[in-house]
Structure formats: structure tokens, C-alpha cells
Length: 221
Ligand SMILES: C[S@@+](CC[C@H](N)C(=O)[O-])C[C@H]1O[C@@H](n2cnc3c(N)ncnc32)[C@H](O)[C@@H]1O
Image (cartoon, rainbow, N blue to C red; front, top):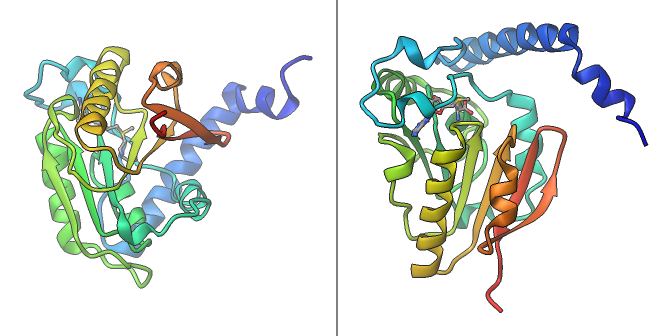
């Protein structure tokens, strides 16, 4: 069977260009409504990043709000038991979108200090009638060196880094799960290195959409 028509259209340069413009517009609208600044796309070369992984990171762009909400609405979980963590959280858009759900706590981990500082300013200004979680913070740290909290987790990854950093991050996930087995879900958007999760005995893939995959910690035999 050939590539489905929908996927062929999505791969055309016209579709991609229109998509980028539309996402920029949706981002600016989101910012106006919520009193924050998350819309610009930023190349990491233009930032001062103190990390050996600086050249291994993906550029900053904020998550598309409606797609994120669709993913969240599809999670059949009592989210009040979970900490939401965005690894590579940039200016914090995914943190604000996550706060529309009653998470116990929301944490962003971002290695670019300039983006982290914008996220902190955004946290103090953010307003939304839909907000259900008010415990939102941003940590300035390399995701590969970040120690996960010992609580049930939903970890969000929007194409943040290259394969080598991903391998280290997944090894950290595995260590953390071994030390403290618990509910642990991963939402991986634009999943370019999904094979690394497939290869990890600690996780099983339980869902996917056009732009993401969903994994959870595998039950121990
Ligand atoms: C595509 S953006 C996603 C932004 C945010 N998660 C969202 O969905 O709105 C990727 C982000 O990952 C950050 N990043 C890349 N490598 C990182 C690393 N090793 N540790 C922490 N952050 C990293 C980049 O600076 C950038 O802000």
C-alpha cells in the first residue's frame, strides 16, 4: 500500500509553510488571551546556554494548544495524582496548557537561562479562567541531569533534543523507575526518536496520534 493521501498532503512544502504561519498566529492569540509571551520561535544558536548539550537541543517553539488539549482530554487518568513535567519547557506554553487540568504539580525543565527567565515572568503573569493547577514552576537545568521527583509522573517531550541526549534521558527514566516503581506516562510529540522508547524494556507504547506517541511504564513481570 502507498503512503495515505493525508500524509502525502502533510509532507508538501506548501502545507508545512501554511502550518508554520498558522501556528505562529495561534501562538500570538494564545499569548494575548493569557497575558504571556510564548509565541516567538527562537534558534538556540542565538542564546547563551551553559551546557555541553547546547548544540544537541531543538530550537524553541511553543506547543500547538488545540493538539495538546486533545492529547490531555484522551488521558483516562485521575490527573490530580500526577506531577506534569515538561522536559525542554522553553517559555512555558505547555506548562500553562497543562494547568487547565487538575495536576498535583507542574514543572518545566529548560536549559536556556533566557527562556527559563521568560517562563518565570510568564508564570507570574499567566491568567486563565480554565486554570485548575496553580503550582507551576520552571527549573533552569539540562534535562539530561534532571532528577525526577518520586511521584506519579506525566512527562511531556516536544522534540526537545537529539538522539544522544534522548538516550541519556531515557536511561535516567529507567534508573528512576527502578529505584521507585510508579505510574509514569510519557507524551512524546513529533516523536523522531520513538524507536528509543520502543527499545526500552521499562516502557510500552499504549497510543499514538498524527503528531505524538504515548508510552507508560511497563508492569514488572
Ligand atoms: C520545541 S521546544 C518545546 C517547548 C515547550 N516544551 C513547549 O512545548 O511549548 C524545545 C525546547 O527544549 C529545550 N531544550 C533542548 N535541549 C535541552 C536540554 N538538554 N535540557 C533542557 N532543555 C532543552 C530548548 O531550549 C527548547 O526550549
